[in-house]
Image (cartoon, rainbow, N blue to C red; front, side, top):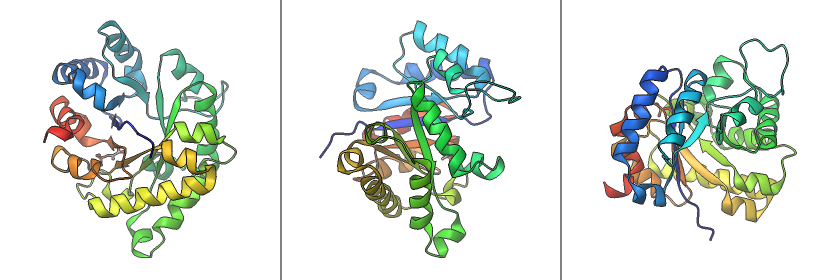
Length: 258
Ligand code: PEP
């Protein structure tokens, strides 16, 4: 079985201006040590306006946290007021880009086809997509969760090479657990992450399914991180609320000690 280094990512959403973001990342780096980075990859995904400041802090202080973005536009450039391209993110040394977050899908109406174009743009610029998938509570209750997630993967990853799929990240985020305090049980999270891996196997083959990293997201906190992270098919976490404060995010990253 492939060794998959866990990836714990903080999605700050529309929180922290660039002054607050600098403080947060410095404080986080004081709480983490070389052992933490050896066993776990860490990324932070601040708002666009913070990216340059955080890039400077991470690089000048040699902090081994990857810079991430929350979103990008699929086109290279053009008349898309308010948007930011993958090429612009690459120039800031962004390494990981969240794509298809349920808030982008629900509030901004992003379709699987658009998400697929974004995944391609992210790869084209040498970055790694974190593709978010997940079901609503109604879909879960109606027994449609697995089909929904499978379709999101098939359509979101259309025409992407096997090697690239094997190197990317999928975040399984049940929509009913995001920002609600209601976490999936470790068993439910494991079952759906195993389903994601099975789906990747049929989309891109066994090799890609073995190496792709699958995060769980949805009210991950210091108290539940270890149980979730210890599941066989869970290779990390995408964390919203609990990643806004350095102390709670550091405790999640150090889940193995708690
Ligand atoms: C998220 O934003 O992807 C998320 C999982 O948020 P929270 O941890 O707050 O549920």
